[in-house]
Image (cartoon, rainbow, N blue to C red; front, side, top):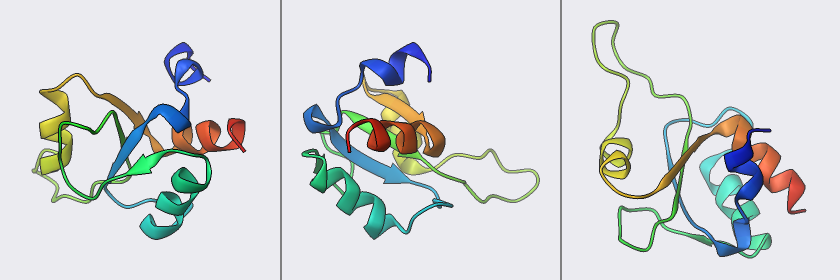
Length: 93
């Protein structure tokens, strides 16, 4: 676990998901956040504090990004991958 994800407390986060998750459906992942005491949004908003990025399917010559990822990179938002999200949820269970 990296130092950054070790400092994240899910109960203090408002989480947004982008991309396809491998271990969960989007709905299951959102439910895990809610059960752990965090909040979930389905759209970009100033209250979002954590973006979880799954697999982004793009064509061979397209940059692998999404609107949500591009938006989050221009803000002060923590961005983690699915593996870090799994560790975060396990630590807070």
